[in-house]
Image 1 (spheres, one colour):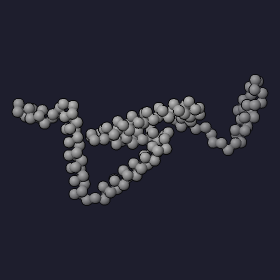
Image 2 (cartoon, rainbow, N blue to C red):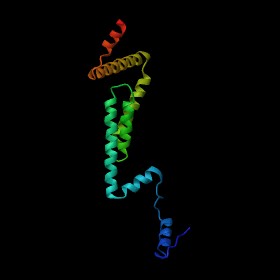
Image 3 (cartoon, rainbow, N blue to C red):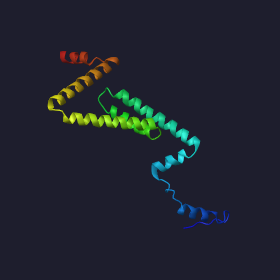
Image 4 (tube, rainbow, N blue to C red):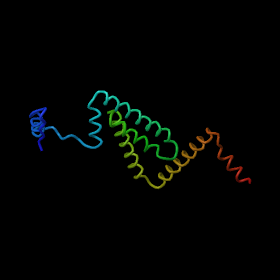
Length: 153
């Protein structure tokens, strides 16, 4: 419904008609619409870039720290790259590369026989166990010594 404000005269009607006949797409809604509104000003764009950079960087850094330990390390790295990819082109390219490599690894692993799968699983378990043990040793906990003391009781 056309709006008419006395203080602007027919300007609102003219703008609405021009917008209706223009080839511009409608304004996006949801998260993308909010991000576009923030990016509309220079200060907003810079602030958004800094916030996204810090948040995504923390996620990628935390994920890389978690990678050697059992848990969702790579998932957090990929999630951090996805956050960074909303503002940085290099992060988008790196995320796509990572997805391609993960897909190639999964396809290669699926084609392997049971012996290779068992070897990969055994190496993974041994590596994860060694990393957890070394990590606990750096914190001052010797789980082997604790287990031996428990068994002697």
